[in-house]
Structures are given as structure tokens and as C-alpha cells.
Image 1: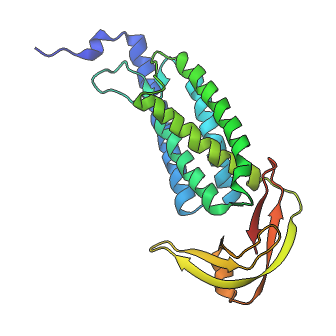
Image 2: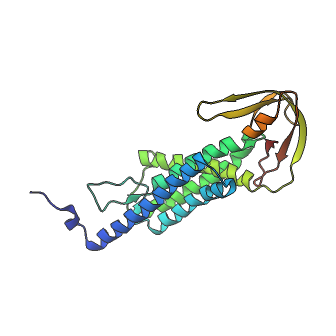
Image 3: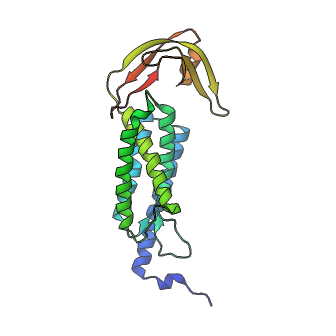
Length: 242
């Protein structure tokens, strides 16, 4: 004889579970949609990356407020009272934001971002541990779910650090003049374009620099070009070619 599991769960908990399902479904779908937006057509660029930066923080607030009914633990169809998961909402858009940060921005010296990255990482780990300790599910830091949290914090803290540093930098750039030695492109369906630039400023030897396709098409080897170096909102110098 089969037993209806829902009858074993109090009506109040069933209602909370249904609300949790709707909320997590909405946020997970929103996070997935934001990831696609960033990956396929990241326009308007500033708005999209700002949304990607803020959205996981909103999810963390929701997670804190609903920590008794929502967690980062994956759901279980055999146990309707088990907490719903917001892991997709947190991880997917953050992964694409980290990828966008890597593609869209060039740091003058990569190691300059390590301190800010580490600070954001530690702060988020503390916050998420505090939130999860208040839920009904305990996550071991060495379990699959615990490692998933560390993965999310790692990629979000990196992507968020780079985006916050470069996207909102309003400082006047320092301009260096150089020339294009060679140009080339890579990729299959999605091409990336590069110039090999002669030495400039702190660069003492030629190196590859990723550039927009429009600049690639109108510039030829031997042409002069400018490199713009900015200080960064978080004090992490970065540059772009134009």
C-alpha cells in the first residue's frame, strides 16, 4: 500500500515549501536568463554587468531571509519538506560574469587583483557560512555542496572584483603610443581578435592584446595606435586599446 508523503508533512510546512519552490524557480530562471544575456548579447554592457554584479547579492539576501525553507542544498523529490536550492541562481550568472570580466578587461599586472579578490572571497565565505548555519541543512566544507559554495564564491569574488574595478572607473587614462606589429584572430563560430603590439610604457617587449573586431578590421600592421591605462576603482590598473 502506497503512502502519500504530503499527508505526513504539516499544512504550514507544505505551504512554505510551495512558496519556496516558486521563489527558487523564479530566481534560478532569472539567474540562467542573466547568464545567457551576458554570454550572447551583453548589451547595454554597463547595465548587463551591473545586473550580474548585484543579482547574486539579492539572492543572498533572499537566502538569508528564507534560510529555514531555502538553502543551497539540491532538492529531493522524495522529500517534499526538504529545502529548495538557490545554487543555480548564484552560480550560473556568476560563472559567465567571471568569463566576461576575463574577456572584456585586461589588467596591467594580474597579481595586483589578488589582495582585493582575497578580501571579497573571505567576506563572502563568512557571510554564506553564517547563512547556511542558520538553515535546517548543514553543509560540510568538504562535501560536494560545500565545495560548490567555495566554487561560487571563488568565481563571483574574481568576476565581481574585476567588474567593479574596471566598469565604474571614471579616472582620466594615461595614454601610451605604440604600433601594431602583427594581427591575428582565433576561434571557430566566435572569433577573438588580437594585435601584437610593440613595447609601450611598462611593457618592455611585444605582446598580444585582445581588441574589438571593428578596430581589427580598420587597422593594419605598421599603423600607430594608442593604449589607455586607467588606475581602477579598486586601485587595480587596467588598460585597453583604441
